[in-house]
Image (tube, rainbow over all chains, first blue to last red; front, side, top):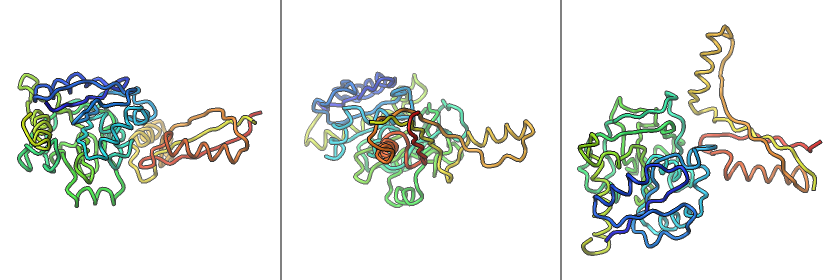
Length: 229
Length: 85
């Protein structure tokens, strides 16, 4: 079975939902506490949403130095899939595993509502099962979700097709540059997104549109390991 | 080793939209301080540091800023080091 490690920082609060989403998708799931150095043979690593270290100083600024991040970085450098959701995306940017930064929402308020997003890059382990350009609904819940990067980095992201999720025109909840809701690194194995797919895995939650992200990851690992789950 | 008092100011980069600064600017205007322009809001971080010299203290603090205290994508930092009284 595909092994998915969900990292827990002090203050992470979407860990249980994220674990459950991957379990629903057929993965063997487990938590890794931020102080541990081993990922215990994880195939996929996830940094979940929440408020690691209370978002003190800057969201993700302290979490990026947690002991577990050495292993997460090694895993990423070796091409292993890493998904950062919301606070996880912030940690990945602070850690330099993704370019740019997430900063305070332009409207200054914490935004918690469903948004329409379009999946653009489908050559990542987390989006490979979506039809290209698919538009669907995911909830956001963040106060610091505005993605910014130097102009040359934005150009590079666009020209290299590394924007994974984009807020549909007119729905940008935070003033993110180019309406960016999620990006990938150059190798496409590290993905960071602000919306919460783990909160959209069942019609009971208002949307099951996020479920495919977890299925995609499990499927992509099954294919990589050359056999069934 | 002498003790130094360090104050680091971390400010959003000028090119960055600072909605907090803008909001405060509007609030100041509403209070009648209409000549105010370009409000930006950052944070001050203060601490003591034992170091062999002021230069070494500054080098050390610069490293702290680069690694943790400021995010170079979004922020500039300004360091003031003075010998503790």
